[in-house]
Length: 225
Image (cartoon, rainbow, N blue to C red; front, side):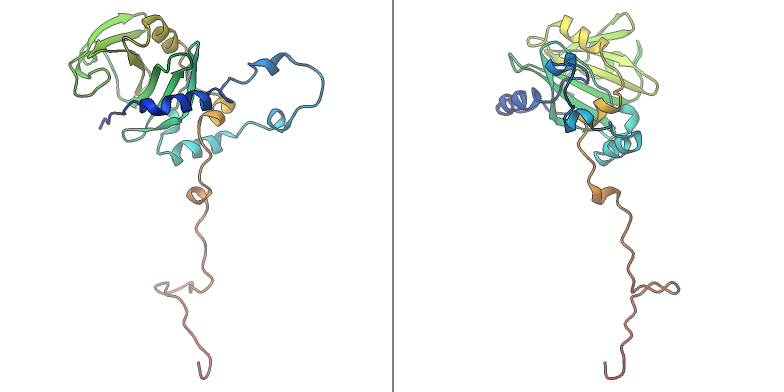
């Protein structure tokens, strides 16, 4: 079952651009990457989250951990507010151009794509026209209804990078598609929000429940109770 995602409202784009510009650079990049000497601050000394924790973060969003991907595009930054589930257990995220507010949409869903199935799914709006497909190396370039995208078949799922044709140049789209990769621990920790402790905590054991019978609470009372 495939569900569509809507573009982020235009009024939110300035806020997303400002928020995305903070803390979205990859580890080892940015002004501090080449500095030496001095003591590392708390953020620099923190250990990356373990894989088990990262899987829990994905599942807390309803996302299968194996379909979480990231990408890079010059001038674009991840809008963390856009990260979430797509369809049953797929993944979706948006990258926003700081200068123009144009959006790249990264989406991952289970399934496959080939010459026969490529035209079946519309690009962008699910109610739009069938896609026109062309091979571009190991990718599928798809156009339709004012949108274009690159689709990358993976093992059991398809990664798509899409955008409006008049807002995102094809070369930017292609570069982002070729940069798609599975995130490492540090990238995933920056990508996914922390899991709600209540969602992963073990159930609370009640001390008034007997170990035998139907599990009804004990209601014993003393004399005169």
